[in-house]
Image (cartoon, rainbow, N blue to C red; front, side):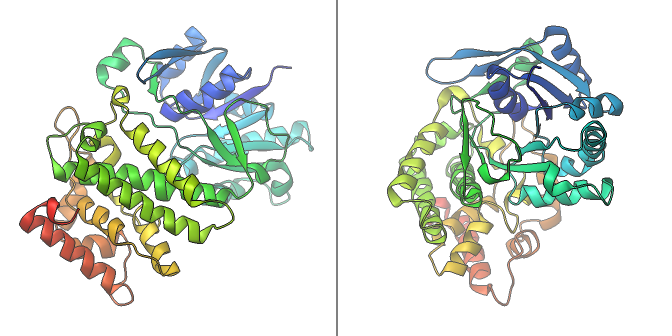
Length: 403
């Protein structure tokens, strides 16, 4: 019987990364999605292209694919019932919405065989994704369903960068997706219930929490810092690579990422070395500078409510540094720049949520970092006041005074 992966989410990561790895690794790939045009195209064509953007562009064709609309619940449950493995790449806000149909598939699978575990790869940029999704699934399962024996929730570290597709690119081919050459999927070795598939590009790790934090507090933090500092350095910059051609921006980004690396080294001394993290940082900055990828400052910096959240890339790193007694001054500069971020897309529009963010807080930094970032005005007053001072300095003298 052909190995089959069922993937919830036929978006950029679902197609360019998870589907690509497994499809080219010999699996049949079944995408579950709400967007009928993509599902129809997958079923009509049976394959799609991932366009690798680098100095020399090349095409990876992903064969043996099809799709099912998520509204076809009976068909979706049937697909889950005999899947070899499953993946979820829908975004944290949608995970709760798909939980009922996933549970229905698990129940149907249990009815066929009571000893057929299913591993579910959680291809989400979300800390503690496994307990989060477990909490969403369990209420829809029978009380006597042996969840811990039959379901493996596999956390991942998604390091692949996939830019926003322009309308003209999607009009040209609704299924094509752009991506960088990086193709390494880090996942939780200990969470699998079945044998880990022998797929090129899978990189199982024992201490998954350390690698999730590395992604969040070095990759995501460095990415966001490039966008926020780069935008304020020159609001006319469109792309990340433009920002990193400015020496001041490059140096600021690198020193901020190195400060985050020191935090990880103290938190996980047995997992990382200074040399390895420094090499990872320099490789990431090289990837951020990939001109062919066309990654925009807007895409990387938008969604301020999430990216300035209490446990996210910037604020989470500051909190961890504070707990460990380490410096975090460079990271506060990134947060201060984020408070004045107003980049727009190709049509001159901001993200709708960011417009609402601005309307709500009207530039009031104290309210932003207390209500959005969750800093306490009593126990974390130094962080609050320092951030306010940095933003005031930006407003008076510009970003050059603080980077």
